[in-house]
Image 1: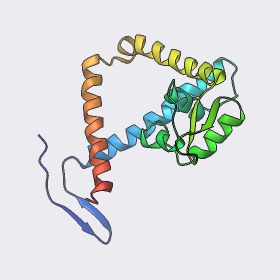
Image 2: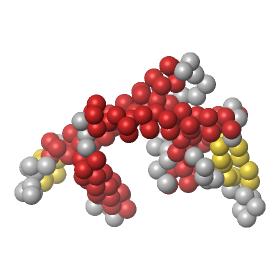
Image 3: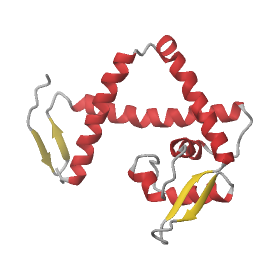
Image 4: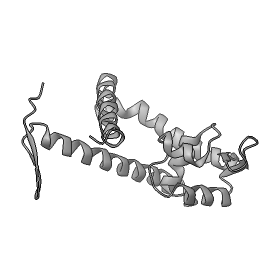
Length: 170
């Protein structure tokens, strides 16, 4: 177990004396780079197929929607979309006929979105890419199921820590 030592805040920033300091910063950087790498992999898959009709962020959004019917707000709150311009991408995907939208019968202010058949095609491409990765990640990437379980547990705890910092103003 890591020993936590005093962290002091001064006018020049944080003087971190914790042994976790470099690992925490590295983990944050790796998560950010991992997301960018995922977008690069998705872009490469679409480039190989000669598809430039959607960008990787939009393809990932369509994948995450899947067979669900959601509001734009739910896309962010459920973690299906990480950017700040969800309305822009939803609008573009509706215009390009990848998403359908319909006003809620209960709350007319709310618009529900779901995939069209074109959107389902994009979902299926990303799903196939992920299936290929799942078949090869242990042999090629050298990452076992146990390592994924441990990594996922740690990432969930780190996410909870960061969310609690905002929620409880730690």
